[in-house]
Image (cartoon, rainbow, N blue to C red; front, top):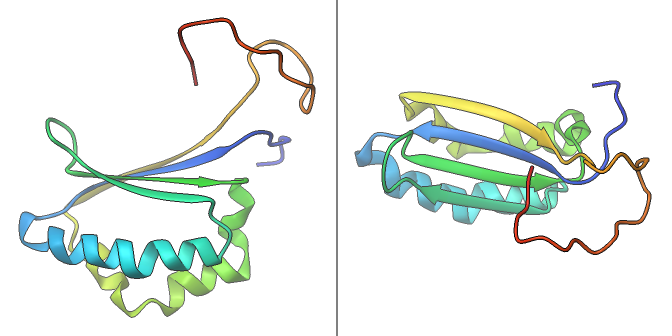
Amino acid sequence: MGAEMTGTTLYVVELEMPPAHIAEFTEWFAFRHAVDLFKSGFQNCSCYRAVEGGMNVCDIYELSGPEIFWTACYQDVRKNDPHNAIIQKRTDHASSIYTQRRGDGAPPGAAMEMLDADWVTM
């Protein structure tokens, strides 16, 4: 993690949640988990349900950088949430951290030109 981070960081979590616990998970995510994460510095918290293939829940979080995971505020969220037990009901999970990188060779922080394209890459 010593490399310079630029742009947006996405934290993507996929879960396989038993159908019997989806409603409980959704309520916890919307009314407790996302609220606490916003307070700890997350910029966006989204929860998606699969309609086909893969695990049945995908949470996508936007943050300024992965260093937020080591802040006292984030650690308190993990430690103090009494409903965190819902996560233990998952049967599978995967998580990844993605950091947006410039692809045009310009140094970090350089101004971006308007893109003239019908595509976007990450």
